[in-house]
Image (cartoon, rainbow, N blue to C red; front, top):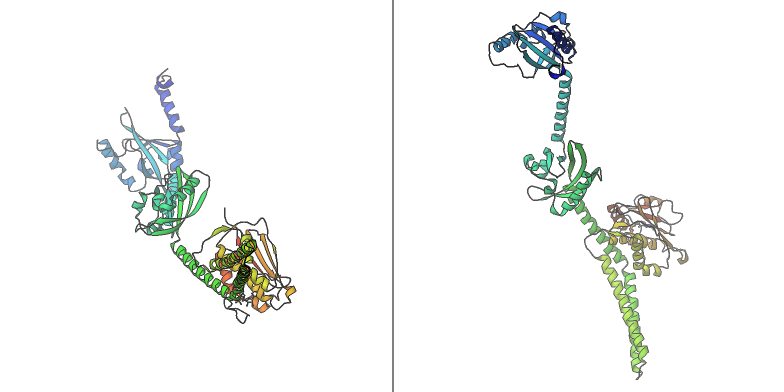
Length: 501
Ligand code: ADP
């Protein structure tokens, strides 16, 4: 056995063996002499160049090259043979080849000298890389497109590693944050986020990275390079490209947040004005409500005086009467407390609330008004209402407005026909409250303008109640509408979205 497990072979047999290896090779193999004359041209070379071996054997190898290489090839060879710097031997390189059809194509060429032969022989291996080049070009074009897309995208885009470190950013992100790309690439998403929001960001980010969620969308406060706060909406998705990456899209919401805050302030002021005006309309009812305990207190006080005049007053009776005075004073105080609460002009605050409790508070507040107008109230309150995220005071105001409009609408009816029905129900995506009365209903020509400001049919009316109410409900993501299908009288329906868990 010879080296590498081959038997020593006779020279003829060895030559035959090498020939068959050359023929079987998938790369083109071309052997030339020191003048560049082709001596061997294997099958793969035939396939690549489109020539048969017969056509090229004995011809100069420059035949297989386009200009200018073809014209210079002899000079190249002379240099190499003359001991000049071998520019190609032993180094694989990409050059252009020329097929029989004249078509040029990229090829990878390896050239070596066959050792120990005189005259010298050179062997070239040739691989057609047209397809690879096409793929590389397509890839480069795609990358170029992507870069253009990133560069021209109107929103901030970044790629971040699992540590949160930014590994790619686009110009819009630089413009948004005030940092240069180099500065951003030395920072993390967390560094950009205001300290108060970092825990929230970490949670969302980790959830995406650890595959708990495929994407996350969150609103965050970021810090601009100049120290100001920018409100952003971050949409992040995890992608697997070698190592895990998060691709983030960042929208600047600063303007939107500012205008939302402004409109919240305006609607809070409007709502407050509405409450003050409702209270003004209720003034005589309220005065009556307070007057009652005051009258009672006065009567009880006279009774006390009479008891004391008796010389030896009945202690137990005296105590009872004084206790009644105390209770009436508390009742009056309670009315005052509720009024103050109702007109308080404080920041609007949304809390998870139960619509049933809100309407119960409203009916308590309007109790005297309802009783003095002899309105029979029935309630059907659902016990499976979803919680709603609302400013309870503002929603009370809406409900009170509906109740007061109903009272007004039924004033001309005979007392026994004044009925108000309040129903709450679980809706498809939240809670619903309807307020239906047995009055004349809203005239057809009024229905379209019902929620516009200054639309009133009342001599003393301002026509602001329903318009303020509708805007309060809309600001809560809900809707207030007039139900056309009311069997008799008017029916107003308020929908409020369920609070998200
Ligand atoms: P105002 O009560 O000051 O008129 P609103 O905006 O609350 O202002 O109501 C506008 C108008 O809508 C009322 O003037 C009345 O014509 C009509 N309206 C509201 N509620 C009812 C109701 N329950 N029944 C009949 N008409 C109603």
